[in-house]
Image (cartoon, rainbow, N blue to C red):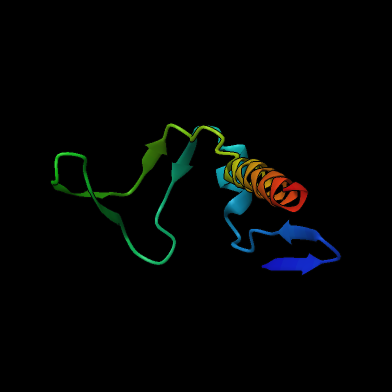
Length: 88
Protein backbone atom coordinates (compact mmCIF):
# COMPACT_ATOMS: atom_id res chain seq x y z
CA UNK A 1 0.00 0.00 0.00
CA UNK A 2 1.26 3.48 -0.82
CA UNK A 3 0.14 6.63 0.98
CA UNK A 4 0.96 10.20 0.02
CA UNK A 5 0.10 13.26 2.10
CA UNK A 6 1.68 16.68 2.74
CA UNK A 7 4.66 15.93 0.48
CA UNK A 8 5.49 12.68 2.27
CA UNK A 9 5.02 9.10 1.13
CA UNK A 10 5.12 5.69 2.73
CA UNK A 11 5.39 2.27 1.14
CA UNK A 12 4.42 -0.98 2.85
CA UNK A 13 4.92 -4.58 1.78
CA UNK A 14 1.69 -6.33 2.72
CA UNK A 15 2.58 -9.89 1.76
CA UNK A 16 3.03 -12.29 4.68
CA UNK A 17 6.48 -13.34 3.45
CA UNK A 18 7.93 -9.82 2.91
CA UNK A 19 9.94 -9.91 6.16
CA UNK A 20 11.62 -13.16 5.03
CA UNK A 21 12.67 -11.51 1.75
CA UNK A 22 13.94 -8.34 3.43
CA UNK A 23 15.68 -10.06 6.37
CA UNK A 24 16.70 -13.32 4.69
CA UNK A 25 16.29 -16.76 6.22
CA UNK A 26 18.53 -19.23 8.03
CA UNK A 27 18.92 -22.76 6.67
CA UNK A 28 15.71 -24.71 7.32
CA UNK A 29 13.79 -27.86 6.47
CA UNK A 30 10.73 -27.85 4.22
CA UNK A 31 8.18 -30.66 4.61
CA UNK A 32 4.83 -31.22 2.87
CA UNK A 33 1.81 -29.96 4.81
CA UNK A 34 -1.19 -31.07 2.76
CA UNK A 35 0.33 -33.86 0.68
CA UNK A 36 2.54 -36.91 1.05
CA UNK A 37 5.49 -35.32 -0.76
CA UNK A 38 6.86 -32.13 -2.24
CA UNK A 39 7.12 -31.81 -6.03
CA UNK A 40 9.34 -29.27 -7.76
CA UNK A 41 11.55 -28.78 -10.79
CA UNK A 42 15.31 -29.00 -10.24
CA UNK A 43 17.77 -26.54 -11.76
CA UNK A 44 18.40 -29.02 -14.57
CA UNK A 45 14.66 -29.15 -15.34
CA UNK A 46 14.07 -32.58 -13.82
CA UNK A 47 10.84 -33.16 -11.85
CA UNK A 48 11.77 -34.09 -8.27
CA UNK A 49 9.62 -35.62 -5.52
CA UNK A 50 10.77 -35.48 -1.88
CA UNK A 51 9.39 -35.79 1.64
CA UNK A 52 12.01 -33.38 3.00
CA UNK A 53 14.09 -30.56 1.52
CA UNK A 54 16.95 -28.92 3.39
CA UNK A 55 16.81 -25.33 2.18
CA UNK A 56 20.16 -23.49 2.45
CA UNK A 57 18.50 -20.22 3.47
CA UNK A 58 18.36 -16.91 1.61
CA UNK A 59 20.38 -13.71 1.71
CA UNK A 60 18.62 -10.54 2.86
CA UNK A 61 17.17 -8.40 0.05
CA UNK A 62 16.40 -4.88 1.34
CA UNK A 63 14.35 -4.10 -1.79
CA UNK A 64 12.10 -1.57 -0.06
CA UNK A 65 15.06 0.45 1.21
CA UNK A 66 16.65 0.38 -2.26
CA UNK A 67 13.38 1.51 -3.86
CA UNK A 68 12.99 4.33 -1.33
CA UNK A 69 16.57 5.51 -1.93
CA UNK A 70 16.01 5.45 -5.71
CA UNK A 71 12.76 7.37 -5.36
CA UNK A 72 14.37 9.96 -3.08
CA UNK A 73 17.26 10.42 -5.51
CA UNK A 74 14.90 10.88 -8.44
CA UNK A 75 12.73 13.30 -6.46
CA UNK A 76 15.82 15.35 -5.59
CA UNK A 77 16.80 15.47 -9.29
CA UNK A 78 13.31 16.59 -10.36
CA UNK A 79 13.19 19.24 -7.64
CA UNK A 80 16.61 20.57 -8.68
CA UNK A 81 15.54 20.76 -12.35
CA UNK A 82 12.31 22.59 -11.43
CA UNK A 83 14.24 24.99 -9.19
CA UNK A 84 16.68 25.82 -11.99
CA UNK A 85 13.75 26.40 -14.39
CA UNK A 86 12.20 28.82 -11.90
CA UNK A 87 15.46 30.76 -11.62
CA UNK A 88 15.74 31.24 -15.42
